[in-house]
Length: 123
Image: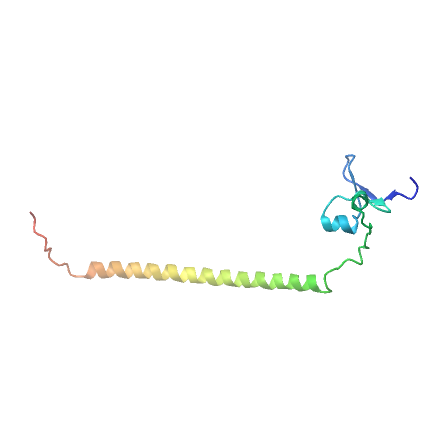
């Protein structure tokens, strides 16, 4: 049929499967497979919609510098996590030392304390 042309087709691997380079706006928004037939794909034709494909450049993109600011934020948070891990390791070491000192002083106090005579009488 003259005037009905598929959009740019991309071969996928070595199989006979292929896909269109870009789905029309409706198929993209509905997240359904677009056959790419022009001037109107089968999906749009079946429901009576005008089949339009927006340019890649006209689709909303992230503001300039947004990705870089997110990457910087990730680096900052990773550095903060590293610092917190180091502090936690230091605290764990101090807790271990205090625990050892406490158990050593408890044993020393127990060994140095005078023994009281037993109040239990054998039956």
